[in-house]
Structure formats: structure tokens, C-alpha cells
Length: 453
Image (cartoon, rainbow, N blue to C red; front, side):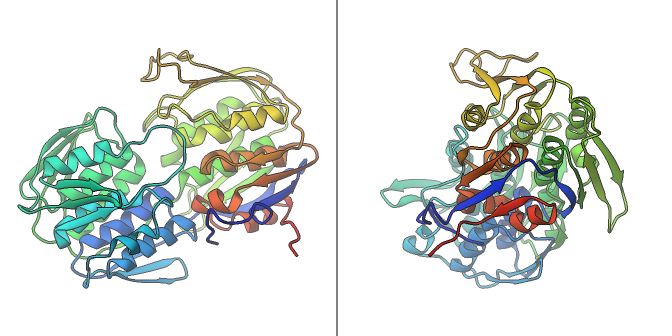
């Protein structure tokens, strides 16, 4: 499952014969955006933790490696992860740098490591190139907690000579990563922390549930205010991760774009309400089975023309920015002009150049083509898209730029006529989509790997 940037292009490629509707069933496990953070939270405990419904994705491998170099005993049994942090220790710069550039998770280890060891190190950070995601928010918050930050050629070194203390902190934007940083640091800081303008995504609330099981005192107030009362000790947890709503929406969009029908076992209605409204507005159909064990949501194309819509991404409970790429692919098949206004990341439409090569009619604008002015207005970022459809997509050779855009390229290739070659699948798709090739084959997709000598 794992791969590196050194993977030969000929091997890091998937051949897709398009034009076949996706039909069948897939299962989604725990959310990528929760599982990796819950793994970091295990560092705070004085006893072992058990995390269930863990997906077999590369981000889990990365965090597993980071935990192990810090002395955590990590074992995976099926989709259950066992983590014993009782022997946490410092790791060398070279050991940590093995993971440099592969994930942005290392920044979130700082708070727990400062509590456990009094010091932490951050290598150069990777992640998808979808816009500015500076670590300044993280470092600023850590400094206010009492951390001393020193940078050199190897990375960023942090220490806490006087321990960490509670703070009053307001985010300029309700950043998920910065909210996670404050939570993971504040739970054992002395005194009370008040975080304003916090992110309140379902994955954040699930992380709070994990921390509360460990013994944390966290109050979620109205108006995006979270209050954390620091405690002296946290124990391990037992937790089942909430399902991945991003993956569920990706399969739903694939069903719509290919005129198919996919039952997404594990998908939950409550966390996908905004997406479901959009899906229905476009003309898609869905049916919810709320059985607690075998339930999920079936998504299908009803056979009638898809309808154009005007949409804006936003922080929760708005339209999730990670949903917009697969939705845009589906909108290329809608009858009329659709608008997508991206307000979370300034560089999230880079993937549309490949869609245009496939025949999609998409124009990008720096204006805010939506009802709400956003942070990117008057800053010359191409953050609004106008999609004219329906467009007859044709096959092309595609280069994946990032994780979510990459899955959208797969959807477009499956909806297109002819044979496409998609490059970068191992580098990007495996970061967040478990067994995606097996799932595609199970849905009837005509895909294959190149024959290597």
C-alpha cells in the first residue's frame, strides 16, 4: 500500500477504460481526518489505547512510524489499532526526518510530546498543495502555551522549560488543524484554555470524545467557543472512529457522474446532511438505511437530466471543501451553468485544467461568485469556477496534483469515453482511500495496472 516519491511513473499509474456505470457496494471505515489525530492523542495517555475501524491508508502508516520512533508500541489487528505509550521517549532528528515531507501530522505531536517529554521536533512538513496551510497558527499557539520555539536547518525544535499553561486564544479562521493543536495541547496544560472561532467539524467533535474518554474536561459552547480545563493525567481510551464522510461523498459523486448506483455501507446521514441536500438538488437520488451495524446510504443516478446549481464551500456545517472536487466532476454532466465558490483554500481548482483537457467546460475567476464575500476576494486567487454542461468527457493522460483532486480525476476517467492513464495514484490516492482499486473492481470499473517487466 505504501509508496514514495521515488516510485517510477510507469508503476504509479492506473489504466481506466471509461464509460461503464459503477454498480454495487463499498464500505467506508474510520475518517482519515480523525484516525490520525486520535492516534496522536494516544501519546497523552499513561495506559494503552484501542482505536477501531481504522482504514488501511498511508496516513495511518505515517503516524504509526512517528509513534514507533517515539517509543510507542503500535500493533494493528484487522481494523483495530492497539497503542501502548507507557515508554515514550525522544526520537532523533534523523529518525523523525524519515517521515519529513510525507504528512503534516508531525506538528500535532508537539503538545503531547511537550507534556510527556518536555521537548519536541518538527521536520519539514508535506501534504497536498491546495493552498496556504502555514504552521504559524500552530507555533503561535504553542508559544502562548509556554513553548520555546527554535528553528535551524534540520527543522523546528520546541521545549517547555516552565511547563505549559492555559490560554485565551482566538483563531483568525476556524482552522481544523489549529483547533486540533489547541485541543491536544490544552488538555494537560495548567489552568483553563478558551478557544474562540474554533472549528467544529464532526471529526473535531469525535476527537473531543476521544480526549474526554481519556479524562479530559472539554466544554463545547455556542458560537464556536471551546473551553478546556487542564488535568494532571490522562489514561488510554477505547474508541470506534466515525465513518469517513469524504470518502462516502466521493463514491456518491462517482455513482452520479457514471450514471450508476453505489451503496456506501457505513455512511451516516447526520454528518452528510449538507452534502445530501446538494446531491438531491443536482438531481441525484439516495436512500438511507440507518441500521446501526449494516446500514449506509445508497446513491444513484435516477436517469433524468442533472440540474445546475450555485454552491459555496465553507467550514462546517457548510459544504465541505473536500467535497467540491468530486461534485464539480458530476456538475460537468448537469444541463446548464453551475457555480462553485471556494472559500476555504485559495488554490483548490488546479485539478480543473486536466478536466478541461478531457472536454469539460470550466472557467475560473478571481471574483467571489457567491453570496458571501470570502477571504480571497480582491487577492487575485482563482477561487470561483463556472461549469457549463453537459460535457462529453473523453479519455486523457492525467497527472494527479493532490489527494482529493486525484480521486476526482479517477471519477472523470470512469465517466469518460475511451482509455485514460492516471499517474500518481500510489503517491496520493492511497493516503486517504482504503483499497480503492479493489473497491473500483467490485463496482464493475474496468481498470488495470500497467504490465511491468
